[in-house]
Length: 168
Image (cartoon, rainbow, N blue to C red; front, side):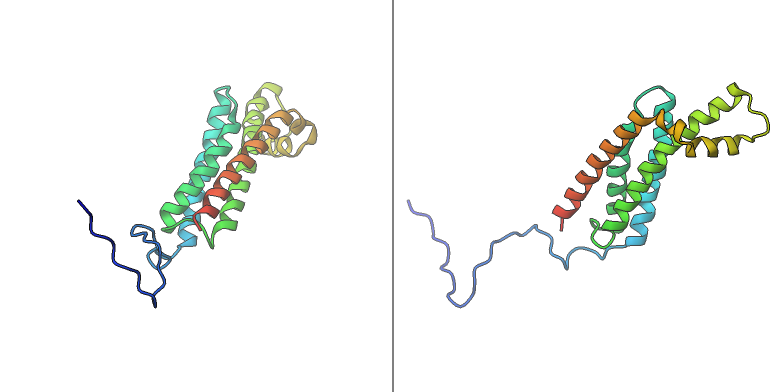
């Protein structure tokens, strides 16, 4: 029993691999950078809150760096209608800023608690917190945490960057 052979290639037409489900550039919707960044900002804010909650529960909060990175990329793509191309650099900068703010949020959270314990006179709570997050001696106490935040942020950013660059 023989099967019918495929039709011969036309000599004047180049053969192209058939990928019926591969999206083409024309098939993807236009990238809505502003909307994508707005949605990614929601993930960053949520990640900052998650960081403080995890920290106050006594766990290592640096893992939230990964949540911020992947959450921001996911929400960006969902809102922008496609993976980041034009918005890649702003998205990565937003993630970096989010990780930095989340680190300072845990320092501020601790300073908020310490204010009552120290019985600070002549300095308001917001002024005390502002001083705590800018004081090098205080920040040195968080050295290991800062290093872990940095490492996991790099892992998250590299993971997101690779995924977004591969989708180009």
